[in-house]
Image (cartoon, rainbow, N blue to C red):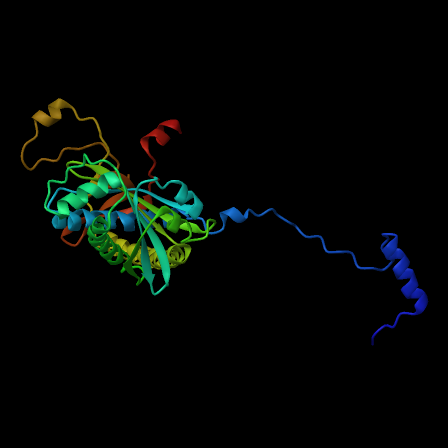
Length: 330
């Protein structure tokens, strides 16, 4: 049944509210444990994701070492330098004034990535494409339209290898979009967008330089989700399968077992007078157990017994196996 307040009760509540007082019988607010939360940590790369990303793109570096080396007919050495999560404004702040920049289509995500190549690397590459020796001593300047088209063929090879590298994890298609100027690159993504920045160092006989690929958040997040899902699956599957396989191999393994008497003193006269068929008394009680060694370790105390036509050991109890340092300490 609903309680209907009288006018006097309503006036009393109103006066108490104005004076900052809590009326009698009012429920106390529930105490909550409030903790500070830093929004900057949201979406940061974990150590496992960083390791998986590095492994994935080291494969990409090896692939372009082979493919570009074969295409340009020259020795190529490509190494992954860094995998970072940066805001797009930080990426733009690292771009040289004179450089080669182009946008990359990422389908079906309908996003654009950024590729940047140092000009001290771009000019020798173009020289090799045109059949030259790949001389790197060229004055840095803006590229002509013909030079941009030559580099476009190289970028298409790079994107084909990146697509092949990502294929086992996530199905995306990388394709050349267009060559950009610095001002055009600034408007390609929001300055605060958290991007995945990949840096590669390329060394040639006559030149070297950096190749940088910046992936938008939509592409990097899709890759993170797939890597995390695959990592959790393989960890669970591999751990259970590995333990089962290890147990099977251990149970089928073979170890050398030795039933050994403790050392006892024997007189030299007894040894020199021994003849075939004689018995050498060791002065040990027949009811005293001896050590049963497994792989050279004293694991059990056992009695020597006969087991059919073979000898055996009747286990008395198991010894505690401690490292030598701990035995000495105890």
